[in-house]
Length: 254
Image (cartoon, rainbow, N blue to C red; front, side):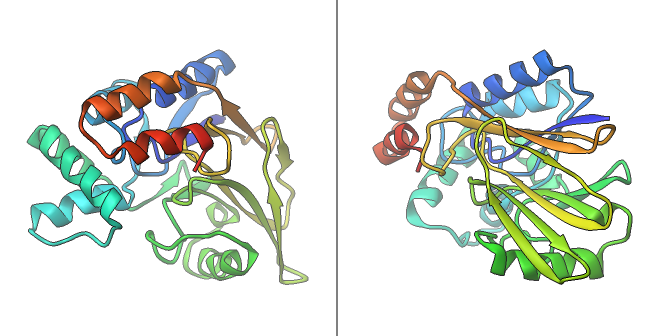
């Protein structure tokens, strides 16, 4: 079974289309999103339509939970830029679309083989930026979730690709930076956590849409960094009246 795993679409239709086109070219068997279908960019309706049309299995991210907060007249725990974009998203989405996004699960055990989380296995809003934070996440993954699916999980939230491996004998976490085309073997006896980055607002210093191919037949994960029609995404953000910084940051991958 081969999965295309992506995250943090953030209403970027062009980034999502680039990922889905590459997934189709590779002939994957299933599509999975680790949360944040919406937020930041100008195409929330089109992105929701596309993930539902393509049968993408999705979980909630903090932006979907932010929609629930707004429904309950609570202020989401977000920075002002994210909050302004979320209010735009809330006003743009039909109620039925908001209901679908809010109804998504916060985590998912995928076909009994691995888990999908938005942030940490211990807290969906917790960021994992380094091996120290990953160590606490692995503790939650190994102790709170059932085997064999707890041997591997895919996450997002930071918008930066990364690979973490936990050796149960040495109790050490190995962190590896990720570049386009990098392939990681999944070896017996270790636990793995792969951050698939973002197909809508990558923050690793390059203007790309990222995702990972998880092959459970050959037991590897391979990362892809894709170009997309960045200029179109930026024009739409500005035309929608969203903050210009949301358009500018895409050019530098921040």
